[in-house]
Each structure stands twice: as structure tokens, then as C-alpha cells.
Amino acid sequence: MTDPRVDRMARLLIGYSASIRAGDRVLIEAELAAEPLVRSLVEHVLKAGAQPHLLLSYEGLDMMSGMDATFMTHASQEQLEQPAVFMDLAYKTFESRIRIHSSSNTKLLADMPVDKIRQRREALRSILATQFDRGQRGELRWVTTLYPTQAYAQEADMSLEDYERFVFQANHVQKDDDPVVYWQGVKAEQQKAIDAIQGADQVEVRGPNCDLKLSVRDRLFKNASGDHNMPDGEIYTGPVEDSAEGWVRFTYPAIYQGQVVSGARLVFKEGRVVEATADKGQELLTAILDTDAGSRYLGEFAIGTNFGIDRFTGNILFDEKIGGSFHMAVGAGYPETGNHNQSAIHWDMICDLKQDSEILVDGSLYYKDGAFRF
Image (cartoon, rainbow, N blue to C red; front, top):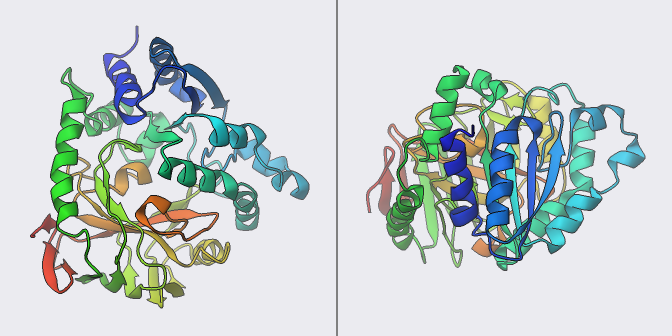
């Protein structure tokens, strides 16, 4: 019997997040561990009159890059440079993509040489660009979510049962209420925060872990309330590419392909990272920032609003939404915000703002100690 929370999750993704319509071609990406959710998604995609197409992996597949442990271990340089043909076709022509993070082993790529990961990322960068470009035009309705596995529970230092409850509650499908109504309410509240900053120029983020200025002039803030991520809860934009000045020390670990960078500190000048240090993972941090010409510039600036996500779990889908935090992503920007930074990476890093911290917008207080103050 299907867990009713899983079925509610599937209906939320199909009917609200991805807004599946009759005739849509829907790519469903997952590992085998997510079989209950995949099965329910297929059922509801078919009921909507759409056509499901599955891209499943038996181990450690990183869907963003098409990398799994077996491929990365044994592929030759020539094979690493080959595109993922089916993913490329689907992203260019399908109407929707639903990605389910569902790893059975989050450390499968932890010992993989950084150069191999970077090489594969570069070979597949067009897929990420296609997702952003077609998403901006409304041609590809994409959403990313997570199915609770033992591996994720261990990363979060939780039992599987507790982690399942955490995940389903964060998505608001734990109880038999209407999750669509909840996420519509989130959208309305976040719109107030957007209205208070939209049209501004200078943003200053100040506190014990940051002293940063950047421009959002002529950039659009987006209301992340369940359309691309589930769970959700953030407002975000793409800053002016050459505007970031100052420094940030990220208070939470930054995780990349299962590898951890702790205590990362970035210094910006004219928008570019000119200095990058870390307490742990220095080699990885430097290598990823050197991926390409765009990987040292910002593609995103965002404020997390989801206080239901009350702990760091080591999974960016949840952690970047933590209420009372802000995050920035180096690398590819979202064209719909006005940012056109291009890169093979999009790496989110998170900083806490709940104590002695503030955000000023054009010199006026906008946010203080984890709460909006406009």
C-alpha cells in the first residue's frame, strides 16, 4: 500500500509544482530508492493525460551532471567528454522535468578526482543552460524534490522514520491538509518581501560573518514557493555580475558531489572571487571556482524563509531554505532574474543571519537578525 504522504507528494508535484497538462512529455529522474514516489508520479502523470519518461539510476546518480559512480570510475577521457544524449534531448524538447534526489549512498563520489568531476561538468554544461533558458521562457516546467532515504537520514543524524517525518512536514504533506493552500500562502507572504526590495539598487549584508555590497539594479526578484523546488521558501535574484564587493564567511558547510568544504570564506572585487579560503576542502574549493570563466562570479543572491526547516541536514535542497539565512551561488545565473552569468556550475553556499546581522536596501533597514523589517 502506498504511503499516503507519498501520494499527496506526487499530487502536489503534478498538480501544483510542475502543473502537468494533457499531452506533456514528462522526464522523471530518480534512483531506484525512490520507486514508491516514482510509481505514484507515473500514475498521476497518466491521469493528467501526459506521458511519463523515466531516467533511473541504480547507484549514486547525480542528476544535475549525469554522473554516477560506475561511469565516473571507469570512463575514459573521451567518454567523460561525451554528452548525455537522452538528457540533452529531453531538456531541449520535453515540457516538464521532475528530479527526485534519492541517493542510496551520498559518498559514492566523495573520493573522485576533482579534475574528472570538473571535466564531466564541462561536457554537460549545455543541459543546465537549456534548463535555465527554457525555464525562463516557460517552455520547460522543472521541479526538484527529494525522497527520504537511509543515506540522507544518516547525513542529517536522524533515524529514517524521523527523517521521513522531517521531509514530508517540510513539504507540508505530512497530514491530510491541502498543501496547495499552504504554498499559496507562502507565495503571498514572500511577495510582500519582494515588493519591498524590487526596483532597488544597492544591497548591503552586514554581520559577524559578512560585510558585502552588491547591486540588484534592474534585476527581478523571484518568489520561490514550490514551483521549482519542493520544499521551498526563499526569494532570490541574480545580482549585477560585476557588482559584488567585500567578503562572506559561510557558516554552514558547502557540499559538492558529496565532498565537504567547511569554513569557506570568499572575497569579492568587481564581482569576482579574488580570494577563497577554507578550513577544510581548500583544494576542492579552488578547483571548482576555476571551472570556467563564469565560476568565480555570482549567479544568485537569496534569502531563506522556511523556519520549518530548523536544522542543517547536509542537503542543499533543504538547507538553502533555512529561515534566518541567506545564500549565494557562484556560477550559472537564472536568466529570468536578469543575470546572464554562464558557467558549468551553480554552487550554493549558506550563511546564518540570525544574530547581530542586517540587510540594508539603498541605505534603509530591510532585514535584521533573521526577520524582515521593512
